Amino acid sequence: MKATLRIKRFDPEKSDQPYWQEFEVGWDPGTVVLYALHQVQEEQDGSLAYRYSCRGAICGSCAMRVNGAAALACKTQVQTLDTDKPIVLEPLLNMDVIKDLVVAHQPFFASIKGILPYLEDKARSGRNDFTLDETMDHAHKDQYLRSTDCIMCQSCFSDCPKRRENPAFEGPATCLAMYKRVYHPQGPDPMARLKEAVRPGGVFSCDQNTNCNRVCPKNCLPMRAILMLQRRAKAEGLASDER
Image (cartoon, rainbow, N blue to C red; front, side, top):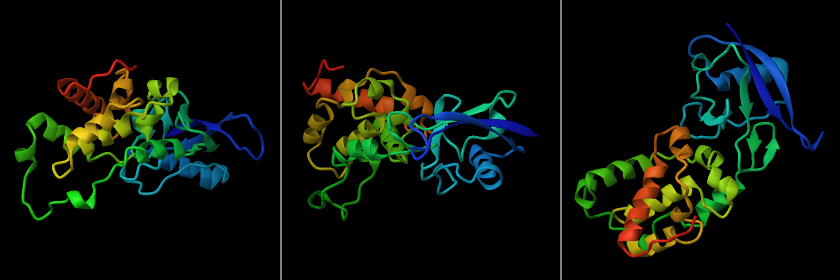
């Protein structure tokens, strides 16, 4: 069976404008978009640029926009797409394009780095046995476990219209990391972390578009984490009118 890939390309060494190019590829049940791109690169145009690594939906490096929504190329099967029409592949949004489907990750990781998303050694209590059931209710345990599945593929960062409208917004993945910092059972001073979560550009900047939930390949539900942080902040008197 055949399918057409319509790829948005950009080579800054040749032009300052992107352009579209189509390639016909073969596919069988089980063929994923990433393998279709391999066909193009190996058999038709070796200059095509895209990222990939694990090929198992774990590293997140092959994230791109497929038919208008962010997705992992290694996870998206061609048979789930309408092959009667060209399959449209574009680079992620909200980041500069380096070449073709490769984007610069600096804005995303700057957002993550800005919240210091790690535990401090002095806060560790690794010798004390505990379970998540002892430290949080069912809803927060479920969200916490979902949050730990985040592979930072940047799909939610790309498809967040609020980030596009307001680059000061940290983005859904960073808010998800904020949630983990506030609710980590071994974390120090959750109130101090909650205050950071509600700072300008934090969880109250979200306009609840929910694109983040739709495109997350790991079903981390960042929108739910944001709402949970908002509710806790309001309960603690840290509400904000920011949008």
